Image (cartoon, rainbow, N blue to C red; front, side, top):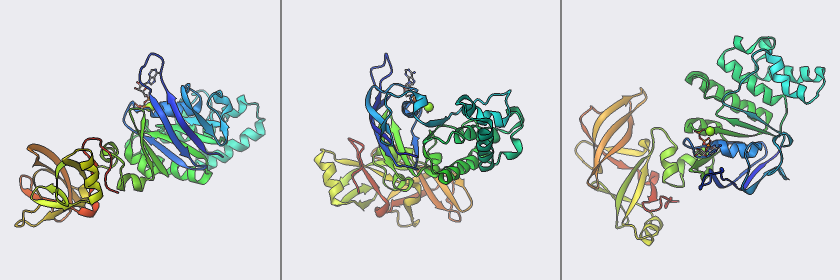
Amino acid sequence: MASVTFDKATRLYPGSDKPAVDQLEIEIEDGEFLVLVGPSGCGKSTSLRMLAGLEDVNGGSIRIGDRDVTHLPPKDRDIAMVFQNYALYPHMTVADNMGFALKIAGVNKAEIRAKVEEAAKILDLTPYLDRKPKALSGGQRQRVAMGRAIVREPQVFLMDEPLSNLDAKLRVSTRTQIASLQRRLGITTVYVTHDQVEALTMGDRVAVLKDGLLQQVDSPRNMYDRPANLFVAGFIGSPAMNLVEVPITDGGVKFGNSVVPVSRDALSAASAKGDTTVTVGIRPEHFDVSGATSKEGLAVSVNVVEELGADGYVYGSSRVGGEDKDLVVRVGGRAVPEKGSTLHVVPRADELHVFSTSTGERLTR
Ligand SMILES: Nc1ncnc2c1ncn2[C@@H]1O[C@H](COP(=O)(O)OP(=O)(O)OP(=O)(O)O)[C@@H](O)[C@H]1O
Ligand SMILES: [Mg+2]
């Protein structure tokens, strides 16, 4: 087992003038489950492929434990990779698929059989060892692909969207299985997905990438509670955080009819940049809905109501700074407003996220 270090690792594809991955810096602890997440094209697969040795590194370095692997061929890195298209050999049994890499490496038959049986037990594949892949369900095939990686007992697992071939329900159960399996085996794992829910539920820590640049590496909790900038704020969380540009006033920000207090530090940091507004972030669950008569805060006209039993989401719009702005507000399941009605909402001051309008960086602590 080992740690993994990306030390300003950069990948510039030939013919491109902008790095696909730009000075990536992450230290992944021994045994950690790190999830790389971000929108399509942000450089997730490239980062993983650099670590696997499938892609040249044009700047910086990559280490596994204290070995510099930057220029080592893939076979010398002691890693195993599980891809989205796990491509099992159709003419081989499950057992032969799982043991194939060991056979190539010249491991003797009895030892291969023992390792395959052990992995099959961990993955609940014992009854299927003599079947061909076509006689398995999608989830079982995915587990065989995992098994192929496990039997090699690598120092590091790499997984690139391994669940995207599975249907939604199977994806949820398989992600729990992979996460608990990883915890049991304790093998350092780097896992790529574009799905922020998958990232938050699986990772010990999550790294968010955008345009080849690392935005934040943090625990799922901190990622949700303290997004480092506007991009992460909008990317992590579903429904997404509401982001509203509001004027700075004495001691706070003006939010409709109300003034919401904001720390002096945050306000002076914004003024120092010459900004007269900040962009506040409010999660849908962090609004107080004021009574029908008080009309405090921002008036939101209700367009759509999504009732989920225990609670509901109001999708509405509001006039902010002369423009119509879409907002999402979570309400209690027994206090769901009518479509077409108007709500007045005030953000809870202690749950307010404040970002610089000009740079997007977080200003509140
Ligand atoms: N072989 C290549 N040659 C040139 N450019 C490439 C190559 N592979 C990827 N790119 C570019 O590098 C950037 C990052 O690609 P990458 O595949 O790492 O993204 P990704 O985050 O994995 O996206 P997705 O979620 O769609 O899989 C993209 O702009 C892509 O077009
Ligand atoms: Mg990819």
